Amino acid sequence: MFDRYIPVISIGEKLMVFSKKDYKEEMKRRNFQTAIIDSPLGLLKYDLGSDGPSPLADADIMSGETPLLTAFEKLAYQRRFFLKEGKHITHIVTQSDLDKIPMRLAMIGFISVWETYLRELVKLEIPDWEQSLSQKRIEDARQLFALKTARNEEIDLIQCLQLADLGSIFSKKQRFKRFLPSSNRQEYDNITRNIGKLRDALAHSQTILPFTWKEIHLQISFIRTAIKNKGGQTFG
Image 1 (tube, rainbow, N blue to C red):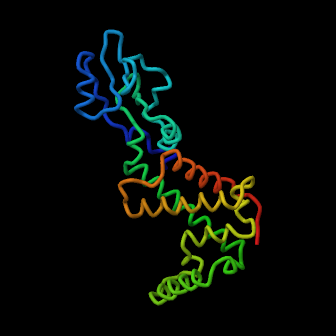
Image 2: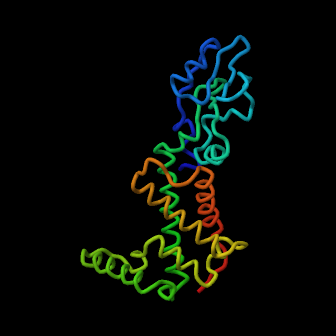
Image 3: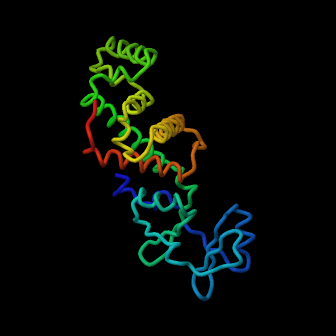
């Protein structure tokens, strides 16, 4: 959905066009980092700290219909884009806009798919998965399993594992090589631990996420690549 049907304009802000005579005052008053300025030569851009207004370049502009995740890949490395509808620049989108509901839903959605994917791999390919967890983690899962079965929920013990547990299972016996063939265990542990931290921050609606947008982009890219390449090696 976020790859195809949710456009970047859904998180953009309507463009405000300033006069050349007072654009700096308006930027200060509104706490803007970027301004679009009307001029006889057409629209000009000004970013705080620049020498002065300059023409818009192709690298500054993105179609408003660009899928949200495609835009995310670009916004992670460039602070802002001007969005075009038809022939007109109508909106601006910045890295700050990535923290809006559509992108938060996309992030939690990918992490949830990742968690489900790992559960299925464990169920299908790792019959001795309990050997990879501490007795404390297994006991916690069994307590949750007992609670759910008492409610007549159709569930198995694997579904009672936490995301951190699933990460630990794949950390053992070189299983992480399925996802990061050329990396080491420490790199895998770091990225899966950070995915868990991001999931917790999103689940608790923290106003400030614990990672930069570049770091979040790398985490989501890891998830997408790992799932896309699901035809990798099997293991026990």
